[in-house]
Picture 1 (cartoon, rainbow over the protein chains, first blue to last red):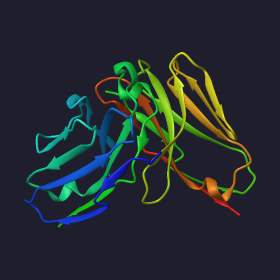
Picture 2 (cartoon, rainbow over the protein chains, first blue to last red):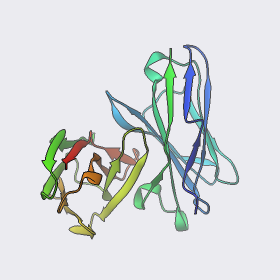
Picture 3 (spheres, rainbow over the protein chains, first blue to last red):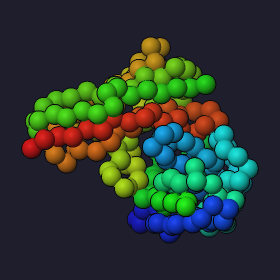
Length: 118
Length: 111
């Protein structure tokens, strides 16, 4: 089975722009979670999607949003980029069998998208 | 608010040595605890998942223990190899934050 894939792998944007990142989960996985990793704050949970619905959300401003499609692929969008948004953005997928939350089972992470905001 | 701390932040050991990585958390109301490894510039690989009702989990040379009442977990790596060099992260599961990660321990195994 192919693993979790994320595109693009690297991205450079300037302040004020917006960006969209994509994540394709492992085939059959229905839950996708997004995380931000920075040297200062470490790994922080952004949000989780299941069955095209946001099921859980971390403490990030409304500039961070996401969505999930019927094939479980997910996108996250960051509007009005700030320098502090420079980070590695990781997505993770899990089976979500019988609707269990993603933290209740093993999550499989993609390689991440490294975003640099200038 | 849950806080997860990992000590030490960095560790260098000679090949073949057994070692222990520590993880502590402040809120014992967790669903589970997971250990991950992260290689430079890459995503995370899940190593072990311990449910809150369990005391330990083993996979090959890795053994993770969980003491929920004291808010501690340890990851034991036996007979370390250079390929074990990576950053090891623990994460507690449950609640609105999905997975709450520690700051990691950077391990270097010297051949």
